Image 1 (cartoon, rainbow, N blue to C red):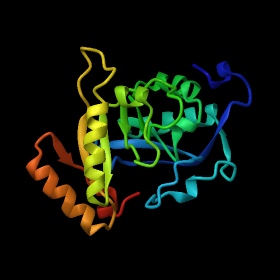
Image 2: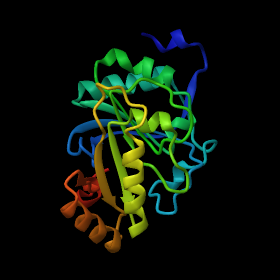
Image 3: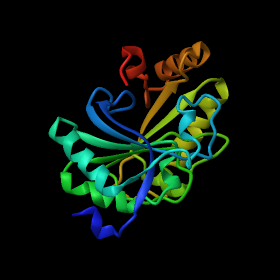
Image 4: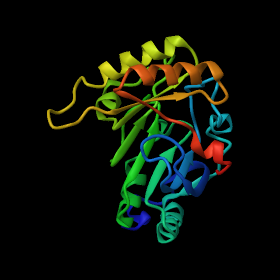
Length: 216
């Protein structure tokens, strides 16, 4: 489908697009094309993409241009497309998803779960934040629940989110994968996550492998 079908001038603030490897979560190590959208009101102190927070400073990119980039990335081996941010749910994502669907690769969403849920995704990674809890809709829809750990309170929050994620699910919808991810360069978070996963078999450890490898 042509982006023109969605109307003239339809565009989104794009921080960057790039083809790399997914560095986190269950799909870590796979070839992926990333769209990083500008705009985030969640404001995590440890965020490593704070430059993405302001929406207005990032250039608007048309759906047609994003279609063309996606087509090239898929031709060069991208196994799926990741829509990330910023906080992508601060935008209406249905037109973007419709524009990218013809390329036949799964669409993944990385979100903190705030804002209205829009778009259609094969995989949803929810990384909830204690100071801005996610909506019940995203909790019930996520495929993996990834909680960043800096202190012991984050472990209790992770368990609360895991329990809440089971509410509202269809009977045939599996529970999300549960991941604990140490905050980058947080030795306390690293030890807490490792110890917790060791003694709680329903959880697994997620590492930011792209940072360890020095790839984008």
